[in-house]
Amino acid sequence: MSHDSIEDKSIKGAKVMGLLDRIGMVAKSNLNALVTAAEDPEKILEQTIIDMQEDLVQLRQAVAQSMAALKRQEQQYIQAQTQSTEWEKRAMLALQKGDEGLAREALTRKKSHADTAGALKGGVDQQTTQVDSLKRNLISIESKISEAKTKKEMLKARIQSAKAQENINNMLGKVSTNSASAVFERMEERVLMAEAKASASSELGMDNLESQFAALESGSGSSAVDEELEAMKAQMSLSAAKTTGALPPADANKPSVGNMIDSELDALRKQMDK
Image (tube, rainbow, N blue to C red):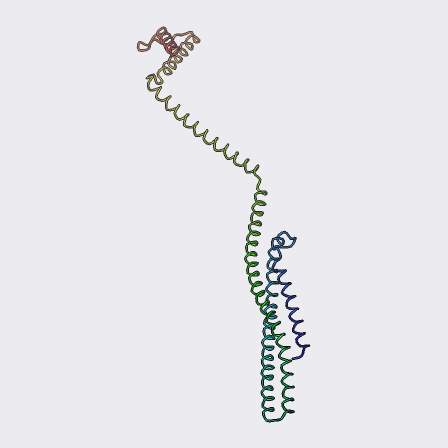
């Protein structure tokens, strides 16, 4: 593995860290400020969660790529170490056989693999630290998104409650309390009038009943009227006789004029007494 490829992986790691910082800034943003924005707070909260989840997906992909690169570097490092050890054994074998030139060539190969292993070891250590950091931040971002979702639901509930209260206030404002009071007053006046009529009817019925009993208690009935009527008839008969110049024929069964007058006077006295 060349030094350029190690630098490329470092650049990729820096980009991943930049993405992580951006996600962290979004997660730390104050959602309460969104409620006071001119746009619909519910839509803003929903869109914010969607953006955070999309960034989380990218972060997971970046972490997966970093872990895959680390695994590949570890394999290359192990392979370089294995090759270095193998060429060292071959150099030893060549010296044992008395072939110093071949041993020198084997040691040259061994050194090349050892240098590669050394370079890979630095990259592996750096990549391991970076992957561990990404994993920790990934867990933290997932937790922050979970908290943001909970807070979003709470804020949505508060927004809906505020809207409901506003609607109630608007409805109450549209209701005319003056007109409603006037209606109740008219209805109350009608009830009072109906009660008064019922009371008057009851009193009239009681008066009629009392007058009937008073007539019975007096015992007079209509006798006074009849007597007055008879007196008036007698008076009319007397007046007619005077006009014709003749007295009505005497009738032994009929009372005399003086008696009729006396009877009329008695009737008038009785009427006055009553």
